[in-house]
Length: 327
Ligand code: AMP
Ligand code: MG
Image 1 (cartoon, rainbow, N blue to C red):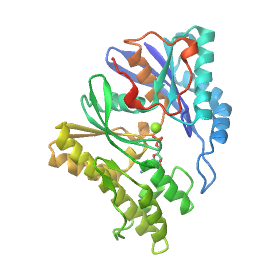
Image 2 (cartoon, helix red, strand yellow):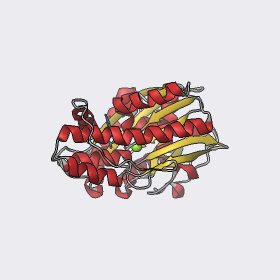
Image 3 (tube, rainbow, N blue to C red):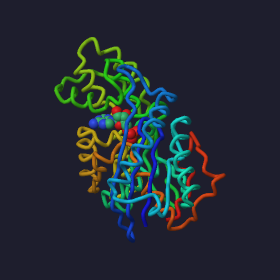
C-alpha cells in the first residue's frame, strides 16, 4: 500500500509518502515548509494559511519526485482534519479532497494527535506505552484502553510548547523557540525559584510563564534554565505518578518538545526508577510532519473504507480521546 499524508494544522505544510507492507512502514519522502512569523510574534492563522497555499504545490511535487512515484500510484490520501487552526486545516483538506476526487483515490481524515502517536510507535517499536504528547498544540499523558486513547493528565491552560514559545518570544526569539531556550539553558546551572503547579494529574503553566518573564531582568540564561527545570520537573512528576498507577512498562514521548535533551534526561531517570523502557521519537519526526498523517491513514485503511467527500471537513477542536481506534 502506498499512502500520501498531508499535514497543515498550524505552522507546517508537509506531504509525505509511506509504503506499508504488513505491519511495516517505510517513509519514502517527507517534505515540509514551515511558516516562520516575525521575531517576537506568534502564528497568525491567515498568514500561515497563505504560506501553506503558496507552498502546497511545490511541497507535493517534491514529495512525489523524492518518492519516485506519481499520484496515480497512490492507494490512499490522508489529511490532518484537526485539531488545529481553521484556515490552515482547510488548505490541507482542500488539497487532499481535490486530488482524491480528481484521481478517484480513497481519502482518510486523520486526527493529528493520533498521527503523532502512531508514527512514534512505528519508529520506536513501543507496543503498549504510556504516551507523553508534548507539542505546540498538546500537553497530554495518555494510555490506550478499549480502543481509545484515555487522557491520564493534561495541561489546564497553555501547552508546554506554548510556554516555551511565548516566553522565547518575550525575550526576542523567533517562534518556535524551544531549541533556542534549550541552548541558552544548557549554559546555566543557577536555579531561580519559580512557581510549580501540579494539580492532581494535570499541570498548569500560565503562572510559571508570567513569573519567568518577571525574572528575566536578573539573568536571561538563568531564566531559561529555571523555566526548563521547573516545567520539566512538573511533567516528570505526573509521568511518575501515571507509571505507578498504570504499571506500564514503556514510556514514549512524542511531539515537537520531545526533541529536548534535558526533558529526555529527566524522564529517563523516572523510567529507571520504575524499570520502564524509555522511547523517544527520532528528532526529525518529533515535530509536525506528513508522515504522521500518512501512517495513521494507512493504519485506518486496514479497517475502514475511505470517507465520503461530504465527510471530509475539518474539526478545529477534535480531541483524540473521542476517536475510536479499531486497527
Ligand atoms: P509540534 O507542534 O509538534 O510541531 O511542536 C512544535 C513545538 O516544539 C514548538 O513549541 C517548539 O518550540 C517545540 N520544540 C522544538 N524543538 C524543541 C526543543 N529542542 N526543546 C524544546 N521544545 C522544542
Ligand atoms: Mg503536533
